[in-house]
Length: 314
Image 1 (cartoon, rainbow, N blue to C red):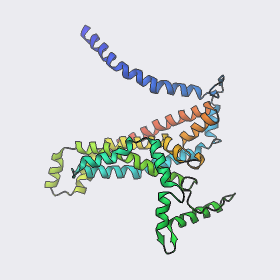
Image 2: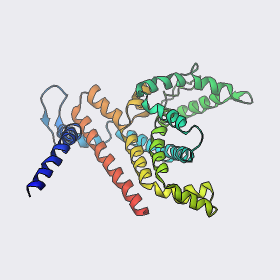
Image 3: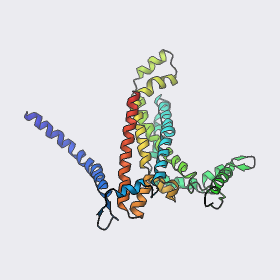
Image 4: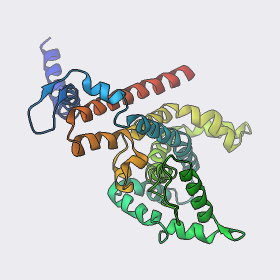
């Protein structure tokens, strides 16, 4: 009995640092955000309890949260159906043991290590109108006498002409300055930065598949595609589930890269940028905290839904 108590105390002491860190970084901030979401507070003065009024403001869409959630869902869909298949394809290719495997792993993972602000500044130079690399490239590719950039400019001008208050015509593509291209232009750097992150997780799973299974399948005449489809991918389904959860919840929480890239947040708003605007520009910490609580609930809900979908398939 004494030995069991001693072992229990030892286990508790070993877990205590992680428990304290978990409480300080996660549980306490969530509790405080929930408390602030029921208050009318500007971040400095006294708080005033107003019940669920902040949540009414959030769900009444007076602050433009509906389009922001729509943008996040679009980003989540793009991440799931474009980014993850690319990551899986790279992981399957490198998992075969090609020449220079370690070099390719390092190259693809390198963008994950770069600061998001640096990546944002890099892509700002690429997206710069007229003198930017993308505009120069597309202006040089022509169909007859019309370049691809001119076609995009004409399309944006035609779309703007249908608005209740038409905008002045553009002469070059404002990649990050209009609603028709800004979200896609934000997704491309996200794809570039995090495709290596998911690839590394999936690569570790591919490498964990016993080589005896591959050899047995090859003896039976299976091709590489059949081995990947019927042996490798089913074996790493749990890792694929984790990658899907990371991709979806990461899209819901996305903030830094979009904030750096988009000069006008309204053009490509996501819930985090709306929360930032409410907290630090409108000085409405109550509404901002309500958005934060809603994001937490959405992330947990999507994680549970994705987990249930994969369990159903199993």
